[in-house]
Image (cartoon, rainbow, N blue to C red):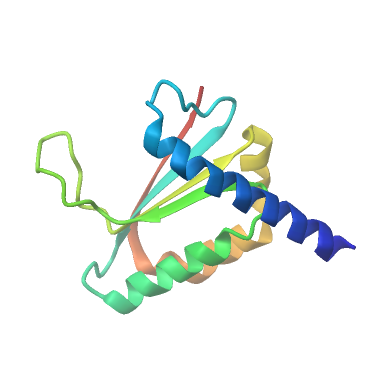
Length: 136
């Protein structure tokens, strides 16, 4: 029964997310807003930024971390090839953004065994981590 509920929740979330893609392509920024959520954006600087095996390991570990139940949406990315300007930082290796319903969801994530395992098993890969958390 528990597996069935988990499947139904994931299926519903997938349908909702898939439904947002066309809307996001046609709607203006003023029409699509994220309200009441906590956005957790993490930037990682790898000790060896040109080591593809380390980057791959970090991305796999971040992907595994997305199994934490309180995460509602996510994005794993890399520096874009946008123009160089004083206000743009392209120096990080990997970015990881998660969206939670609220502060309680993010608090639960911080002490979740998967998050603790992620830090323990992967912290040797990075030289620096910067976190930006925001709410509306």
